[in-house]
Amino acid sequence: MKAAAILHAHGRTGEREYAVRHPSVGTPYKYTIHAQFDTRIGTGSRVEDRVCDFVFTKK
Image (tube, rainbow, N blue to C red; front, side, top):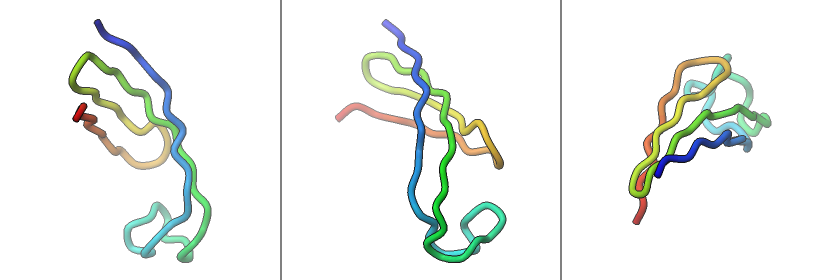
């Protein structure tokens, strides 16, 4: 069985060199991930700004 999801990530930035457009530390961020899941693993891709892929595993 497969399922799809839209995930909304949000938080505050850490070190400037790792954040999109290098904002000050503590700047709020948010982005969307389109994800697919089956019974043991999932994958997803960030929708906005830079390319970022995700892998989810069930423990």
